[in-house]
Length: 320
Image (cartoon, rainbow, N blue to C red):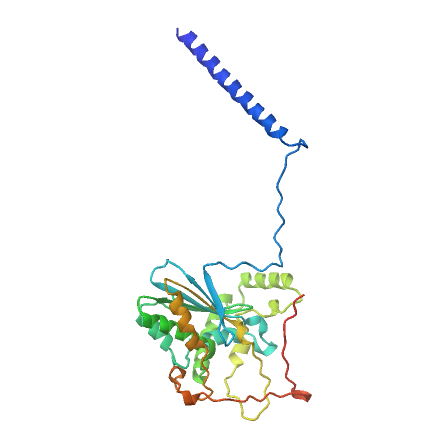
């Protein structure tokens, strides 16, 4: 009985397998029969064009202020009650001249050494007083093509949001560059250089420099490490411009600044706050431009040299 039962079971299983194969064969024949050419049809899509502009997330709100500053705002639910603010300046180490190696990085450091509305270390002190952590909630970095300032602030109180945007506004156009602070920060920058490069002897740094020279041959990138050259950092001395003296002064147009403001249900609030902070220029010295009076706003004429040895020029990028 057991032997007979076992044999019947195997026959039943075999029959089921054969039936499945037959059905699968019929379906395959029908599928191929619907193709007149007898060949499998594969839908092909055109590859994306590398010249096409990248599409922007529809959740991002973006516009340009009258002074040329571009801003991007996106609402995020996480982390809750926090706004991540970014000021991105499209200027970095690659724009430095031969006698300026490391000064783009030094400018980034000086943003934390005093601004018009936050003298000295007031930015650090204020943010720590509201529970923010230096290095984690407040930081910055200099790259080849951009300098980025990072700031995280709570959003549970309106005054904190306004203060965060005020700090970004000062970083954009109101860093004071106090001479004594420049000298004091020089030691911090040199210490960072020693830490990153092991005093210029780190094999990994040398390998990266060799790789950059190969990958970016014929460009300025291999010659402009953002950390800079210690000899030039040590030699840099702050000095005021002399009145009436012709100076070779280079600056980037306002659209080098971009502000990124992800936050938690504060998009409209942040957008409306940006305008008075980033578009004020009374042309009269006042202690705090946020409290400039109507009479402080005056028409100003700027003199630009032209012709001869002191010719001025506007350099525009050429798009192939």
